[in-house]
Each structure stands twice: as C-alpha cells, then as structure tokens.
Image 1 (cartoon, rainbow, N blue to C red):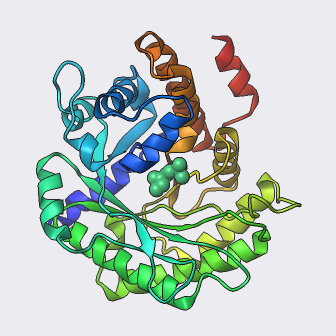
Image 2 (tube, rainbow, N blue to C red; image 1 turned 60 degrees about the vertical axis):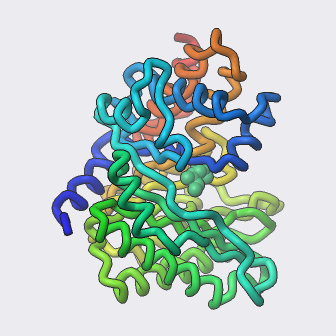
Amino acid sequence: MAHNNLHETASALVAEGKGILAADESSGTIKKRFDTIDLESTEENRRAYRDMLFTTPGVEEYISGVILYDETIRQSALDGTPFPELLESKGIIPGIKVDLGAKPLALAEGETVTEGLDGLRGRLAEYRELGARFAKWRATYSITDSLPSDDCIWTNAHALGRYAALCQEAGIVPIVEPEVLQDGTHTIERSYHVTCRVLDALYTELFDQRIDLFGTLLKPNMVLSGYSASDRAGGEEVADWSLKAYYKHVPAAVPGIVFLSGGQSDEDATAHLNAMNAKGPHPWELSFSYGRALQAPSIRAWHGKAENVEAGQRAYYHRAKMNSAARTGAYAPAMEREAVAV
Ligand code: 13P
C-alpha cells in the first residue's frame, strides 16, 4: 500500500491557494443543470461543457483537482486528449466519483443509504488505470425534528469506512463526504447538533476500519440555518458554529476539509469559507470542493453555444480565483465587481 503517495496526493489537493472543482454530476444531475439553459443533455453536450471547464487557461493556479464522473473520465478534449491526461498536463489531479447514489434506506421513511460497494475494488482498479488519484463518496442526511435516525447515521458511516478502506488499498485518496442537507426550516443549532453526530459516527468507523487519516480528505456541509428558516444566521455565526463542529469531531491528522457548496449562492459559499479561514490558523487546511458554486455562472454564460466558450471560462476562472482568495481570508465582496469590470 503506497501510504506516502496517499499523503502526498491528499496534501497536494489542499495546496496553498488551491481547491477542487466537483464536475462529477451524474447524468441525471447534469440534465437538471442543462435544463436551466434549455440545453439537451446529450453525450456530446456534456463532453463540450466539461471541455470548456477543463481547458480554461490559467485556472490551474487555483484548482488542484477535478472530480470526474464515470462517463467523463472516459471522454476526451476536442483535440483527442483524454480528459485525465489533459488535466494532469496542467498539474491538476484527476479524481472520480465512485458511489452509485443515495437510495431509500429500507424501513427508514425519508432516509437514504449510499450504494456502490459491490464490485468497488474492481472499479477502483480500472479508475486508477484511467488516471484517477482520488475519489469521492457522498452520503446524505435530512434534518427534521426527528431525523436523521441513528440507523441512517451509522449505516452511512459504515459504508463510508468500507469505501475509504478500498480506496486506500488501491492507492487512491478517499474524500469522505457526509452531507447533512440544509433544506428545511431548522435552526443553526440543530444543524450543528446533527453535523456533530454525523462526524462523530464517521470518524469512529474510519478508526475501526483502519483508515490512514493522513491520506484522506473530509468534504462536509457547512453548518447553516435551514434554507427555508425565517431567521437565518449570518456569515460570522455560520463560521463559528461550523468551526466548533469540526474542532470537536475532525482529527488533526486529516490534512484538509474541502467544503461542498450545497444550495448556497456562489458568493455566500465564498464568503463563508473566507470567514472561517479569517479565524485561522486551524489544524487542517480549509478549502473548497464546489460543484454549483464554481460552475453556476459559467454554465449561464456558456448557454451551450460555442461562441460563448470564452465567456464561460472567464466566469469559472473568476469563481476559482475568488475561492482561492477565501483560502487565506483575503476575499472581499468588492473583488467581485473589480473582476466584472475587466
Ligand atoms: P455542490 O458544491 O454543488 O454541493 O457539489 C459538490 C459535490 O460534489 C456534491 O457531492
């Protein structure tokens, strides 16, 4: 087992000023994104969209790795270069989403368990051959007055542990993603409490399943008031409650925490990351692994048209740069307007 390579890859993914682009939307999810610009989700359109993102000039200054989907890791840029090779040539580490999605958890109304463990050892070997050096597995938990249940929390934690062990055996860095969904009307205190329970179960399982934490990354939700709550907590509170949860439950051996953006606006996701880093230094790097918050303005600017590729790339480059600034607490909302003027 190539432990040192795992450590090196995990650290490289959270290198100074850099974060991860999550471009691993499943075919169903990317269709939803394309629906917003009235674009049909064909294999060629999906390829062209990822081509635009991955060939963005200079973005490697801010992006350390890209998470691909099974279809995407097998696709190529317009000039025929396979996407993993193209990324590597820019110094960007290719990664792969390996879970097969959150499915209803039996006998647990309203809850899910993430599937994809059967045959995973073989799939990881193939992905590594195709160039993947890290992977992602996402579990989801809903908050209500009574959920998530212990059953849901521990079942998903166990699966995350099994996934992480198989990744490390294959020489692939596992990103473990326990996403407490922030939909609903819950208070930020409730989100904090649920996030703590989820993280506690996760690190218990990772310990029991002999995971080398130095060769992993955590991809958690930020602790937020529910998106539909009437009185939502502001940025400082988000940073304080989030940090409190990670300080209590994420071992210092973990090299980095790379956030998902969830349903936050692009600028909120950046501002919240910035607020947390402004309160540093912390035991782990605090970085980003955003999907929507890096891509939303880009997909709008592109609109599925070849003549808009440069505009789409500028929008993506800009968000990557803003989030890079947020890694050191150097981001300020005024920087958004300056860039638009360029
Ligand atoms: P969002 O940033 O859009 O939440 O996506 C990140 C991700 O990879 C979710 O699994």
